[in-house]
Length: 82
Length: 307
Image: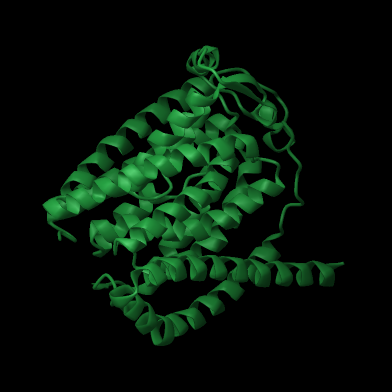
């Protein structure tokens, strides 16, 4: 059984991350409301298989996208601290 | 905000807050957070069949983040996870079919609600009793952050896991990453199949039942159980949410908004596990399913979200 330890993130990193997420969340609401909402409803009503596939694709895409952006930002914060 | 797919009207900021909270729980306890998300979504006004499917989809996203964090910390037993996926997917299908049957009988809210209350109360009592017993066991005197995973993992009721390991059901295999020399593959498949049924029927990744199964029945160290459970949830919840989406039980917009909050919470939760030992994590977990059970009782008693 092995357990490698990652350097603990600082509160500064978390704060920056939280702020970034807050901005992204607000922007995403508008995106979801204006574009994805109608499109998903259309798929839900008439193309159920495509709806199921796209629901997973968009969910995974959103998760990975947020991770990449946040990882990059934390890296930038650490570089500046050095 | 009106969600056209489910027909529910919910404040999106509540969804982000809920996502954030259960993201922390997921990263910390290794569970999908459905013990809290499902009752809250139900009380917010989402029909129970949408609660089950939508929470599963949201969990896919959230668990990817948390599982990656645990992977970096070395908390995933890939061999165990591979076998568990097989059993969970099978069980998930049985659970999904159960929901479809109840939809036809128009009894989803009541049956799923009552089943959830029974399971949550049972888990809560067991986790508290075990965590309390285990916390009395004398362990390492080093600060928790300096202890190894084995030193942190004091556990009561070890006899159950020893009995499982002694089962002579061929084929058997070893799990070196979890420190297990020999265990029946059937034991793993049965445990994952049962948790898969819970996942498909009650929603979420069923980490609230799979985590205790992994720790007490299979004898997996708590930190490995958390990481492996999360990894396995990604696959099984992905399958479950696809099946529920095909059956019209998923409001993808609700799930997407919840995930934005959960992504942050999951990272915080995964880091927090380094500061606590196994029994403390389990005692802290114990009251959470009770909160979920109370919310379900409230929803059923007040007729909230009855469909």
